[in-house]
Amino acid sequence: MLNRKELKSLAKERMSGNAGMYVGFVVIYVLLISAIGIIATFLPLGGGIAAFFAHPVVIVALTIAFLKFSRGTDISPMDIFRAFNENKLFFRYWIANFRVSLFASLWSLLLVVPGIIKSIAYSFTYFILEDNPEMTVTEAQKRSIEITKGHKGELFVLILSFILWELLVLVTFGIAIIYVLPYIQTTYANAYRKIINEI
Image (cartoon, rainbow, N blue to C red; front, side, top):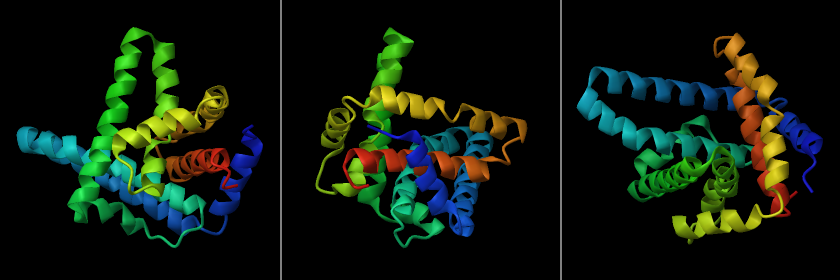
């Protein structure tokens, strides 16, 4: 059973005294996403292609970075660029995001609820890839489906519990993302760690 209060408390505890670390991740993430958007706007063809490949990789890299952050691993905000320096890792991240997004979208075409359920079922794919370098993306996705069985309802409620925080990001014109993004990402990483009996 997932205790939301416990997972969030662990996230806040990890973030306490580590503001420089998580703010660094968010700043680099926002700058990268903004740069990708600007390039895509001014260079529609080449920029669009670059965005198509780079954006998903940045998302996966950030997600994995917060898994490491939740564990207290010695990392740097510059680790987000690691995938861009390793071709094999780059395409592994890209394929992972492509598969997760594609399958979730296809289920969403049926009805909203199946799409949400499948999105949650696939939500640990990136974490599993990080913990199991020998696994293929397909295997990691299947493993995510397996370990989320019996927890989808709890994970859905956990996601919903951050709605007010997400609204805070909107009313502050994005400024609050510096705290809210790490808080959500670290809490969700804790949920994964709880399910695999790490915490």
